[in-house]
Amino acid sequence: MGAVKPFVLLATRAEDLAADAEYELFLRYAGLDERDLIRVRLEAEPMPPLDLDALSGIFVGGGPFNASDPPELKSPVQHRVEAEFRALLDEVVPRDFPFLGACYGVGTLGAHQGAPIDRTYSEPVGVVPVTLTEAGASDPLLAGMPSTFNAFVGHKEAIRTLPPTAIRLASSPTCPVQMFRVGQNVYATQFHPELDLDGIVLRIHAYSGYGYFADDEIEATMASVRRAPVSHPNRMLRNFVERYAR
Image (tube, rainbow, N blue to C red):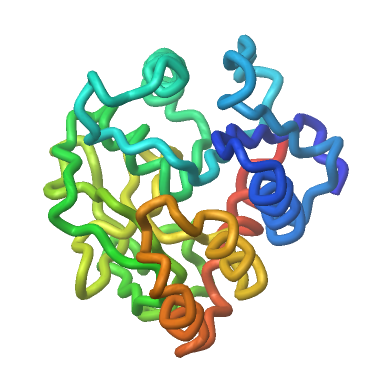
């Protein structure tokens, strides 16, 4: 694409295969090449100083960390990553800087805004219908999206209730907050806008044994991600780039 200022992907996946596949998915569906999307693997290294004036926007990928875990159960790496996101969002939110967190975006942006995050609305790995709110239907990041579309999910925690600073943009029958916005340009989704079928199948294999499903449920989980076509969420990544590339 050749954006004047690059975007950055903040990632936390420790498994190389899943991490590399996530980066490739963001590149493909955002319409960027590697020079336009800088990847930072936070599980492996501290977050470098990010000069927001030198960037077009920030993506956050999914990952293994749960904001709702008791502090004593969080690893030193998770404590570091959470502190780094708090400091980053202390700058991003007041500036209303373009930010799109996918899945772990809920744990980072939601926690930063004081939202209660727990396991009330967890969703197993699969496909769910996501419905836009009135605010979502008029949001430019969701331009061209149908009022209800299928999306891939799989998460142990979710926002229970939105804080007053946030605007709900989408929901699903089993998770009331599937997407929200703070200000005009700071977004988080519970579903995965970057995923396609091959991508989620790879993740099912990569995260077998991580508690998302039992060992004897792999075949059923595979069937659940194939039960309905998912074709619309990827558009959000291109919308984000087209809106904010500068």
